[in-house]
Each structure stands twice: as structure tokens, then as C-alpha cells.
Length: 362
Ligand SMILES: Nc1nc2c(ncn2[C@@H]2O[C@H](COP(=O)(O)OP(=O)(O)OP(=O)(O)O)[C@@H](O)[C@H]2O)c(=O)[nH]1
Ligand SMILES: [Mg+2]
Image (cartoon, rainbow, N blue to C red; front, side, top):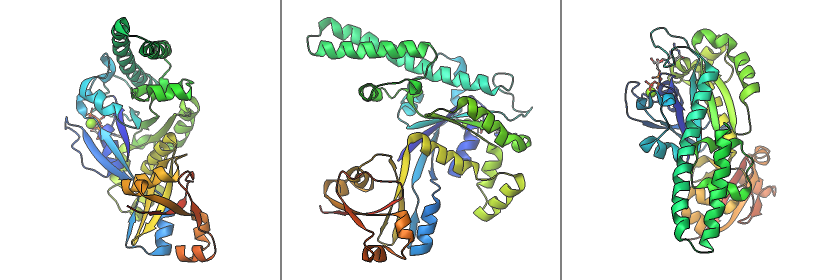
């Protein structure tokens, strides 16, 4: 499962966004962190369901984490530490909620509204956290080097050099996600789970009164902040949380009235998926149509492992058809008759929209 953590300054609307995304009712005053699940919007799943009338339709899921109110004033402190760091380090991506709504009764922690300043403050926070991790590791390497013999010595020196290089970049305000690293370096630093290396979605939380400018604000901010591993979105958390309580057609009606095209929540999930390089594949079995998310470039063996470790261990082959080919037929059986089912082996790279039946024995 994909894990995404919601971060941001105090009173930026994190818990509101969390509740909207997960259709949850987390206590906004609570100090504890919240974990919730959201279903990944996938229009092709509905088309498949309409065609095949399965007993159950199971969308892919994302897990969201809201790390609670006690991170208040995070931007002023020296770095993210302890329990928060452990929680944040393990997620796949971050959503930074930045406040743009005005409300006299809820003072902004910094005294005034300033989206750019708050984006920079969080970037700094993530960089501080990574620098602290690097410094601790460099200290340890220094100690280990005193007694180290070859070839361990060589390995330690290589790690030391790489960390010193990354440290210098961080000190120049370059987050790790922006660095041009070699595949070896990416692999070497993966274990550190650096925060500034994680894909980042900046979510600008606007007020209802700003809805008419939402699209132009997003375009303007997007031109400045969009990067391969960083995107920006504007939405109104307060409205989204209300719409999330309605059924789909009622919510669509309200959206049309407010001039909002697609659901802000759906767009948030989709953007996080894009940032993470995730694609969907589908399985149709025992009366269930299911969507699964995998990293683009995953082979059939690993994709099978997503479903069940037995499927990976006992993998024989995969029967694959594309969603588009299946659309030309009325069922998988007809696709088979028409010769649109391919047999693929372990190393086949799963494509977005593949409909797969895994054959395995255990
Ligand atoms: N007017 C307005 N108020 C909002 C909006 N989004 C959130 N709020 C309000 O702002 C307050 C803070 O929202 P939360 O979602 O609790 O924000 P948070 O970042 O989780 O806050 P803490 O965890 O307490 O630091 C709540 O009273 C929300 O109802 C919005 O778009 N417009
Ligand atoms: Mg909160």
C-alpha cells in the first residue's frame, strides 16, 4: 500500500484535508496522529464493473497519515525529530498543506498569510531534518574509520564522500529530490529515507471566497513550483470535506455550481500517484474486479507479489490483455476466443491498464 503523510504548519487545515481525503471524522483538536484510507479514483474500474457485473468492485487504496497537532510551531524549531521523524521517514510521499484561507478567528501561526514563505519554511524543515541525519551518520563513520580495515574502509569512505556532497547541496537550499544522482547513489541513500528526497505535493488550502481564482492561482503557482518530483494544487479543504459527505451526484451538482471541475480530492490522489510514478492494473477473478497500483516498470513477477506472496513464489505465467482490447469484447472469455489474451512470463513489464490473470501453483 502507498503511504502519504500530510504535513504543514499549525492551523493550515491538515486535519480538514485528511478528513476530506479519507472521508473521516478525525477530531480536529486531537493531539494524536490519524491514519486513514482513501480509495484511488479509477474511472476504468467503473467501466469494467458495468461490463462484467462482478459481485464486488475493489479499488486500489492509499493510506494517509496526519501527524497530529503537536507539531505546532514546527517551522520555528530546529528540526523534525523523534517519533515524527520515524513516522515521516517511512512514507512514500508528502503533502504539504499551505494555508491561503483567511479567517480572523483562527490566527495564522506566523501572524500573516504568505504562501511562498510557508512553502519555504517547510522545505527548510525537511532539509534540517536530513542534515541532522547526515551529521549523525558522518560522526559514526568517523568513529568506524578509526578501526576499519580494507575493504570496509573503502566502503565507508565512499559513503562519507557522498554524504558530504549531499550535505553541501542541502546547505545551498537544494532538496535531495532535485539532485541529479546516479542510480547507485539513489540506491545507496534509499535506506536513509531522507525527507527532502520524497516526492512532494504542495496543497494550497484556499477559502471559499477564493474559489473563482483557484484555477488561475494554481496555474501561476504551478509555473513556479512544478518540478518532476514536486507539484502544486489549490483546493478548498473546508468545501471538500463537506462535499465528501454527500453522494457523488449531489457533490457533482455542487461542484458545477461552484465552478469546480473535477473533485479536488480526486485530483490530489491522482497527482500523488503521478508524482510516485504509479500505474494501475486490474484483476478479474472469483466475482471480483480489482484495481492495483504498482510502480511503473514493475515486472509481472513483482506485480503478482503485490496480490499475494504465494502468487509470486509459485508464479507460472500471466495471461494479459489491455484494457482497450478488453473493451472491444464483452468478457475475458471472448477476448480469449479472439486471441487478445497474451501469455507473458516473469520479466514482462506490466503496462498501465493491463488486465491480468496470474497462473501459479503453491
Ligand atoms: N475558513 C476556512 N477555514 C478553514 C479552511 N480549512 C480549514 N479551516 C479551519 O481552520 C481550522 C484549522 O483546521 P485544521 O484542519 O484543524 O488544521 P490543522 O493544520 O490540522 O490544525 P492543527 O492540527 O490544530 O495545527 C479549523 O477550524 C478549520 O475548520 C478553509 O478552507 N476555510
Ligand atoms: Mg490537525
